[in-house]
Length: 305
Image (cartoon, rainbow, N blue to C red; front, side, top):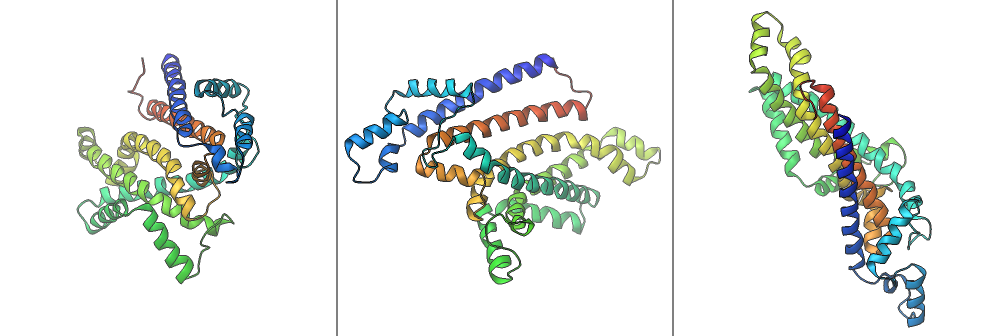
């Protein structure tokens, strides 16, 4: 197990560095940030001074090496837009994104697994058909369209909820529910399939012959075995939620990391983009590793060499 974790962490470091190098080069090929930040009537001397001040007049390999050296001391440079340390800007917006993604994930997981169990228990019935049809509809509708319709209905017409911002639970409801719908449908469908596959297995048939009730089979035996694919899918969905917050945060004007990344890409704020990508890539890789390790806890038959 220890060797497996060390190998995965080694691969994780290489992957993060590869992603970082790709973003680093791509952002610098997108245009000259000095021309964007300075007034249109800025002189050539002012433009050259701006590039020299932020190290943009050096070759890209040199800039990347300087960035890597700074990483060792958590010095990621100053934001070109906010004139503050990029890490400080990111950390200021991160809690809002974590709050939104976690609330959406917990809702999707609890409601998705519950609906999947109900659909499997009443398979073929009206409840099963209704849940499956709803899941297909939720996965067919674009996230941004659901967000706009929710604003029109609950904020503009009914005036129950605020249209945007981060000001208490009321402002969290619409973005969290919008964000959770797609992963909810995926988790529900996976739970239903896994439960149905499990309750058709030989050991469940043996439990029925022994007289064990259907409810006990479902909750005590089938659910535990069905959790393995659900855990794998949930880990991927949590990663997708962190990425999906970009659109949701922009629509609801949620002051999180997603909306900050959009603003930074538009203004070519290189330091903030680099720190944001580094943070997200590290989170996704560690999340996948955590999912793999959870397999051992849920299913002792799994061993790593």
